[in-house]
Image 1 (cartoon, rainbow, N blue to C red):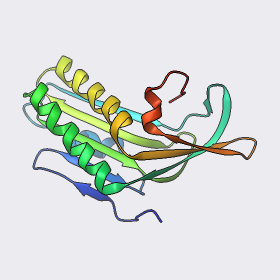
Image 2 (tube, rainbow, N blue to C red; image 1 turned 30 degrees about the horizontal axis):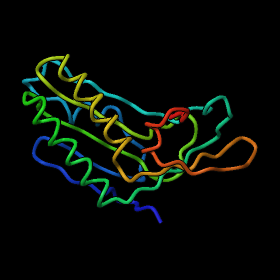
Image 3 (cartoon, one colour; image 1 turned 90 degrees about the horizontal axis):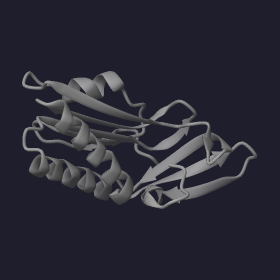
Length: 160
């Protein structure tokens, strides 16, 4: 059963969560913002209406929360090693059933310079999709369903 209270871990500068509740772009941006930033880059992953041309009506996400949060924490640490000027890292992922148009994942990175913020944000989402123990169940328009490991999104032919 999905938790109603968000599972989270954070440092003074980072906010890492898995939650059943809807995600907020405004909140993610605010958490990534800091006075030293010249850029805040936000990536919003949303439920789209198709995968590889097949109509989708909803996605259902499940996560092994303790391990997923550990992966998020590792991603934030790796970002800080690669881009030491990054001021804040925000990673939020939903669980439960989401309909077309809902936000499933938010990644926000605050940094003094835009190029590092973009690179760190891209690294965070790509690494999350490859490493985090999060699975999605696609609900097709014809009533059928299929489970997909998000790590499979790195494989050719996967419409992630």
